[in-house]
Length: 252
Image 1 (cartoon, rainbow, N blue to C red):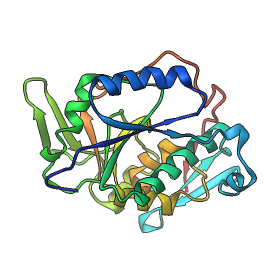
Image 2 (tube, rainbow, N blue to C red):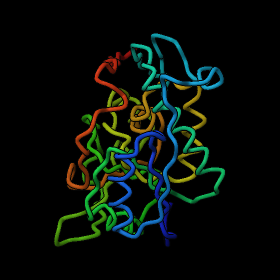
Image 3 (spheres, rainbow, N blue to C red):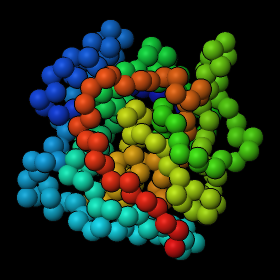
Image 4 (cartoon, one colour):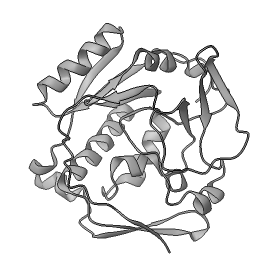
């Protein structure tokens, strides 16, 4: 996406019964006068038979990337991870169905600061096509040196920058096991949603892997800098749980 942007639509992925979480994040979004709605998440431990059919039960997943390079991801998704993965995939389809050019997605345990809204309102500063803008840090993604920085507040040192090698084959070589850490706050275009829906079923990857593995999804992904400045998390119990599998990645 490039050029003039419309006003931003925000979606908060949240389980229906998480009243306190909805109150916390809702108060922040309301105070910043943004257009938002809650998107009811899929509860992994109470999935319907039809929802279960949308998920893989394999203990090992092999992803094939450009140049026939492959990576093995170990461990079946936990029920909570399956619910989270389906929640993001369902929201991608919702964005497509609503014919939104792009949308802001966040999870309900997020605590964004005011600079997030400044960043979202400054996306037109990016003077090249983009598909995902992620606000979290990454797990060692290798990037092309001297990638252009698109500043939207020079005084504060805020800028957007493309991550990855900017080439699908090079990303498959250098970034096949590297990814953006969280799918907790990001901006995504309708075209990126279409790609992820195509890649995402049956659900066999955690939501942050599917979104953040630039060597696999080949999305034009940008990060917002400085890292770890724009968001924190409310102190609350994780709905994913502390027993999330490690999902070791092995190059094949």
